[in-house]
Image 1 (cartoon, rainbow, N blue to C red):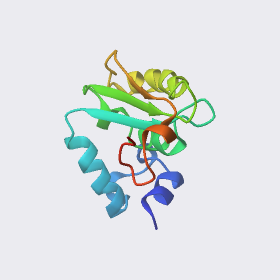
Image 2: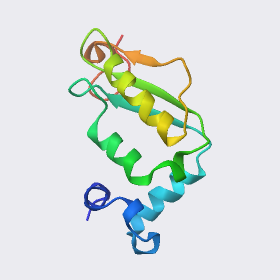
Image 3: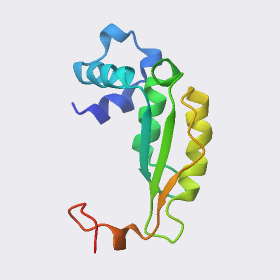
Length: 121
């Protein structure tokens, strides 16, 4: 099973942590040990990516609480994912990882980055 498939089945809120899969325990450990979070997401249907939202919802505030976060969004549009960032801000706040006020938006990302992820000249 993939990590994503396990995230979709049930959140850890409803599972005894000992019954979680090894992959989810590893992700939990990594997220718990972080001092801060940088959330990076494309804008999809005017919101953050479902995968990011599922991960945030899966682990909840016990993992993310009392740590700062930052928001980076990207989009092929001229707005660079601003709508996704605005939707993500209250979610991060509710989880207790308050986002810093400054956000990074990458508009027309297809013109900024090459297919291999390097910066276009």
